[in-house]
Length: 157
Picture 1 (cartoon, rainbow, N blue to C red):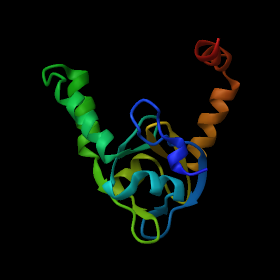
Picture 2 (picture 1 turned 90 degrees about the horizontal axis):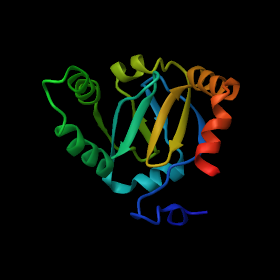
Picture 3 (picture 1 turned 60 degrees about the vertical axis):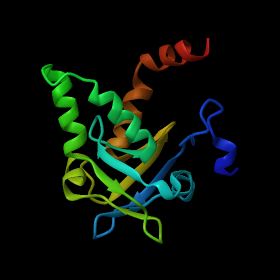
Picture 4 (picture 1 turned 180 degrees about the vertical axis):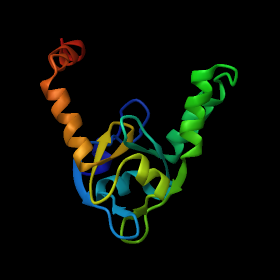
């Protein structure tokens, strides 16, 4: 199945999905899955701090849309100001090299506790990067939670 088969019918944007185990090399790089690289295309992406000790990798066009929404937040509201700082102070432009590798800057590696084994997951319109251990913890917590059935129920039924 090509990425053309996985475009949103609403806005023709790629849908990122799947979970891929990767290794972090000595230079702090990971290789993105080929389908993710293809979906990102030539436009590149922006990597920033995510939630729960993860990183968010946004296609450039999505990050620019997010930027417009963030610009509307008030600088006088503490939570809004902190969110903007969190996102922009950690943001780095990313473009895979010829071998599909992307460099993860040291502060972002530290935030996500990346040191060896990395899991790259698709989350619809963006990509998340996790330490393999933290991702396994996230899955375990969700699978052990009674909220899992409720979450499915809210979506499907």
